[in-house]
Length: 424
Image 1 (cartoon, rainbow, N blue to C red):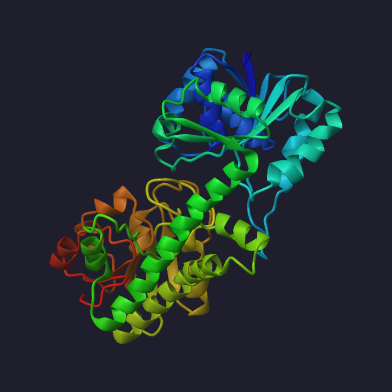
Image 2: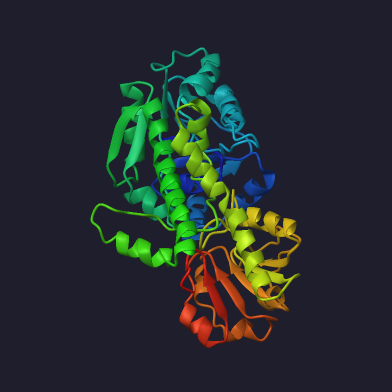
């Protein structure tokens, strides 16, 4: 039944998904509107970083199971995995989903299965996709099967979690859900749970909103701890020994295409009811400003009025190259407002995306008064202080991720501050 799959959107989710199906014997045609992306993939090159993806991409193309272009082709299954960002006013931008659905309409035929993987507000399948797919003239739910099966993976571990994680499948009817389940059984070893499309949409948004609220709680605890003489990291670790407590970690903000975005979907739908959700989002969105102000105050306390900061980390999380909604970018804006000069360095973002970015570590730290760690890359954890000590003008560090070996840096003459730690 599923001899060929067409995957629309070859980004951080679409490309690994396409490769997984191709490497399990399914013919896959990948589609992306970005011509550079298509050209790179055609040449077995990557435009994103993900562990194991390079080898799996080469295999998929060499076996002939994966082809790519900027236009769809006829297939048995269409998987839409395009961005679903928010606008400046925090409203959901579903134009990518709508455009991708329109793009496949000329290629759809009876008995096709259409799956939306993008994380979206509840009722997107019903209110956005189905009206477009009705243009085919086929009977929805009978001649065209439609489902929502959101990705539930973490960057850096995509292939492991695609296979091992449980999967939620929401069909517009039972037949759609069962067909989608049968498709993903090709590689999914986790349990596949069936429900309706709107519930599946709600579940994914709920998952990320839960994490956002938990992080906001941790960030509030970090601010309180700085005022009452506590190391919040120690306190959270101790609290989490309780069998029914799992407090997340604080940080300079929340980024990425999910946690920083999805709660706004719920707030937009029900602003009068989503009060806790809105408060958490606002709390986390304010952390970059709090971080920049902490940088300024640390420099002032040392008598440095116009300091220079070496910012370590632009990606929104460790060991990936994804800058989407990264709080680091917001921290930089607030540093600008504070009149603080800075350089930026991220070993995972190998092409300069900012005028302040350098690929040279020594250039990044040269004449700096502070190292500001915003991302917990392994490279930062494993740095030898001696590699950079001589280049700095003042040996200050603000670690917002608690990822450095503080004793080792202090032994090298650095004064280390930790976000949420009043003991340092």
